[in-house]
Length: 477
Image (cartoon, rainbow, N blue to C red; front, side, top):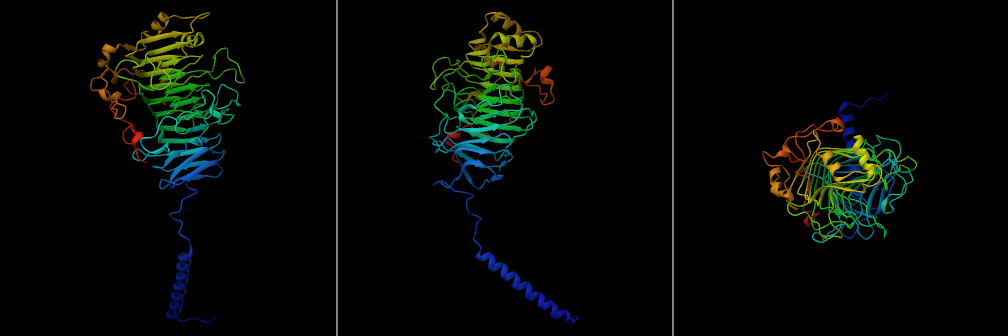
């Protein structure tokens, strides 16, 4: 074999390398620059349009803005990932809605300083309740209805299943604003800010704010998903609505309501149903599981003044801090409710039977500034109960429940800014009675719950700091 001198060989290699590099540079010069190109078709404002079915894994980037047009469906087996700081706008004309179907996943994990925002496509100052659809997660966890049950608003048919730990992904440090548009002409066809249909406990939900929802802020239709750090701001109907056999757990949730806006059905902090009429239990699943979630450390504020009992600027009035009805078995611990006309409305003999069996429990609950703290409805016939029965149960030894009249509201040591609609401050003042006395026995002894000392959503830490927005009407996105 002929051998080249070492220096000559090195020289030949240098020339070859230089030529190859030059060739690569030439090819790069000729290739189109796609670094600043949008990832899809855009609307006139430059927002990337999302429409139809998402059938391949996709990531939404923070350096782009997106517009939901119509039902955008994340299909079975597909994952939609959303980067921190991404802004997604809902189109009003097409009723833009994001639906994560059974088997699909959403990974939307913002940060405390860089949350993900779903909001109205309208300009600041012109946004309103129900400007677009909302965010809907659909899972395979148990429900007490036929698995062919139709979802509200024509979203589709079929949710739930037998997979208690089903995983629909994660929502963390997420805001959902101005959702809840009516999706059809039928009554109750609005969807909510965040709607959870048969969502399983493998799904993670933490630090989510819903503002100006045209229906409920949060609604669970069955399922087992747990959640912490929820904010319901200036909703239209109910703040926390549980139906169809929801059995998950929630800790740290706050609602701040605008006393001028309520729903025609009468708005509540909690509305908890099993299903209508609730008893007798019928259907494919024989009415089971019963709706039996456990909530702890919830604060619901309507007004620091007179409870709003007259027609609001919306289509209805306020009703109850907690409307517990239709054979539900909800339990609520260590929570404070201020300003609704009624505190607790216990509705129906089937529900009262759940109270008597211990399936329904309220402990460490404070009702304040209510015209009627305890009310009963549909309490006739076999198993009937009276207001005196409800009072005896609510005030029983060991429950640590209390009723605070309007004249004594200041005794709770609430921050005077708790009722500010745009700049609220919910931390109780030093020495507040809400900072002690929490109870975590029975159902609330579950390891999911942090065993804090305070009642309500806040002790001495403001977990809303940095990622919430109480004036989205005037925010430029």
